[in-house]
Image 1 (cartoon, helix red, strand yellow):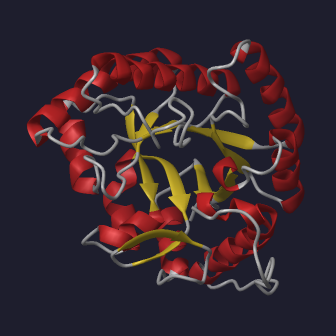
Image 2 (cartoon, rainbow, N blue to C red):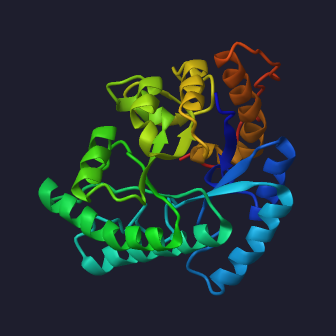
Length: 304
């Protein structure tokens, strides 16, 4: 069994300054951070990106935090279209903007010594047939994979419910279509496995083990794509974490609660002991976990 290394996603700490978020995670005992490039956290489109990345790298080193670079910011490219434009956009210039963002993310990841760069396909635009959408996806990813190969940083594509690439079977299709490039890996979201995969989350891990480059984790219910705090969904976590440890996975397993930023520090505090307890239970070594508690009777801010 390989001990797991846990991180927390900055998209779940969007109300904190990046330095404050990193200090919080280090103080809580996390091994790393899932860094979502966004306007409030290492803006990938603002000037002096290389210099800002260098300063961030020194800060991560000082705090002892590892990092994975994530690219799921909602409005970083277009303030009016959530996750737009995507790799499937009908406009080639818009697709190029997403490709440019991903290549920037690869450079940031290389400079930070990140485990991987996460990305996703996007939703098939209305009026676009599946064959055309797949052609757009493979064409758009080709220069990103070339950049990832040059940088020595894996590109970890995430199957996302509702997207063109939604399942592990879709990832296999992409991998075969592109000729199984070494730089192409998988982001496996444990909640998504519970949501829509025919296999259990533990079985998904075993099936995906050769391609795992990044893991996201949260609770979820079958058929409902809603990221939930641990204990609020249906996932039995000890066998899931035991399966993940058995693969020898060396990257970060990052808590993904983007709709809970209104109480991000609370959920960061309680998620790590939950995961450590579940990991220990999977190997029959129980540890104590503080009670979940309630961050607020009337949480402030939007959760959508």
